Image 1: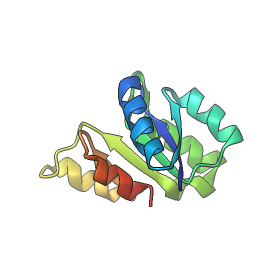
Image 2: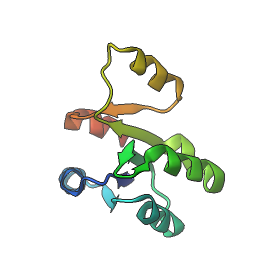
Image 3: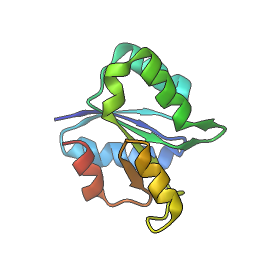
Length: 117
């Protein structure tokens, strides 16, 4: 089973995801801020990193940049999570050019499970 880092400032969503993935045998670490995620990454090496794009006053892109600079081996494990994307918009094409998978909130748990395989 996978070890997952879920970074999201919406703690209720994080708890629900951790509970759901935990029931399927995954180990889940939650981080509501970039600093919390960085502290966890100092001592853990997750198989999957699910990073919300908007973290209050911070951005998941800031965390991604830090990962690319300090832990580049983890960059390919990142999936972004956002509620700000409509599949049929020009923005969707821009997101795809980032080269990382994107889960659109609200997502169903089957989509989430695919990211942990």
